[in-house]
Image (cartoon, rainbow, N blue to C red; front, side, top):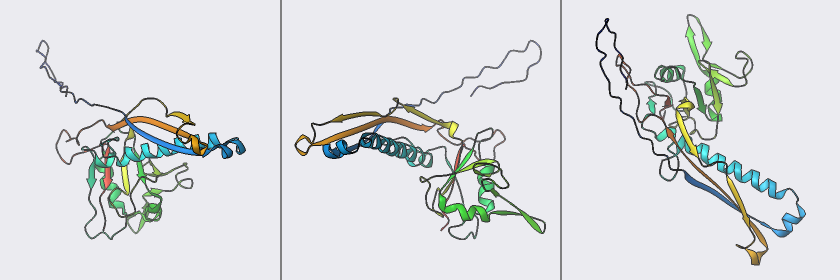
Length: 246
C-alpha cells in the first residue's frame, strides 16, 4: 500500500510503490424458461405479468444466494467461499445447535473496522438470538435487541448492526448459520436488468407460448485475503461466519 512518514524540514520523502489487485469480472448467465398455453393466456389477462414477476424473483433469489454461497465457477464467488472470509470457532464445550454471546463477541472483535455491517442469518436462529445474554454482576443484559421494543427499530440488532433474516444462511448449528458482513466490500457487476423474450415457435404444435428470462451478473469480495492489523494480532475481515457447532 501507500506509506506515509513523519519528516523534518527539508527531508526527502521516502517513496512507496503500492501494488494493485486485478479483479476480473465476467458476468455469468442465470436464466429461467416458462411455458403457458394459449388458452390460459387468453383466459387470464394478467398471467403474462405474473409469469414475468415470478421469473424475475427467481433470478433475484439465485443471484442473492450466489452472493452468499456461490462457488465462483460459472457463478459469482460468494462470501462463504471467499479467500478473505474468516471462520470463527465455537466455544470450548459449547452445545450443538446453539449461538452464545461469546460467539458474536468474537466475530465482532475480528471485523475490519469502519465498516457498515449487517448480520445475516436464518429464521431458525431466532430463539437462540433471544436467549443470548451477557452476565453483569448478579444480573445481565440482552445481546440481541429484537425489532421494535428495546431497539425501536424495524430490524433486530446486535452491537447496533441490523440482523437480517434470509433463506441463504445454513441451518442452525451448521457452518454459516450466522454471518457478519460489510456488503459495501462486495463487488457486483451486471449487464443491466433481466432481459425477457417470448416465442410461439418452440412448442408451436402444442399451442404454447415460451417465456425466457436471462440475467448476466458476477460478483466477489473486493479483498483477496484477510488483513493483518498494523500491530499484528488476529487477522480481520469485512466478512466472517460462525463455524459449525455439532
